[in-house]
Image 1 (cartoon, helix red, strand yellow):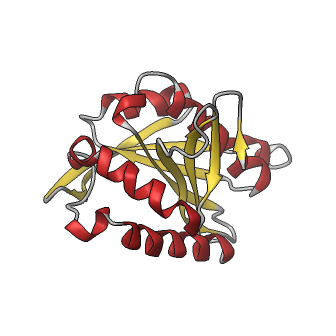
Image 2 (cartoon, helix red, strand yellow; image 1 turned 120 degrees about the horizontal axis):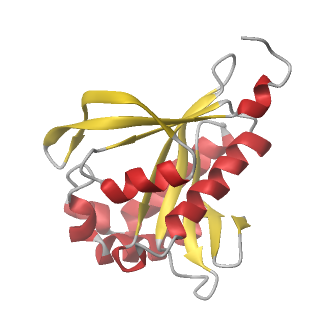
Amino acid sequence: MIGNELIHLVPADVSLAGSLADYYIRNREFLREFEPAREESFFTQDHQRGILEGEVRAREEQRGYRFYICPVEEPGRIIGNIGLNNVVWGAFRSCFLGYKLDKDYINRGYMTMAVNLVTDYAFRELKLHRIEGNIMPKNKRSLRVLEKCGYENEGLAKYYLNINGAWEDHIHMVKLNFAMHANSEK
């Protein structure tokens, strides 16, 4: 587990299925504008258990690292998640960052904390070189989080993802692990 005085980032585990289903039910309408269309079964504990099983396998295979955000004062309550997805090793050592937060916890600094914590984990523990986050231009709060965490805009990806039935442009935000450059010349 990773954390600070306000939040814990709990690694994916099937025991979280009930809390995760509750999170998605509470945030169904709020997240609709930022996510793919969801079938009704997505909001069940059984479906979430299957997702968690896949996330546990991804971690074991070093392909992805999903964490669930829980407030220290409510350790059993999931208020969001953050993940290092599609990890590529070898010469690339890169991944995609994805995250979401409960509607009742936005604008409190929780996601900025979570991004900083997971970025530090990716760079220090996993020794990744590059983290890429792709954000819809209309999602100003999310863009601001990555800016505060030192991610830089590398351009616009046209029609990047199908979100809620429409192909949406995304701003490509990146953070590099410059500590890996200490002994290399450009």
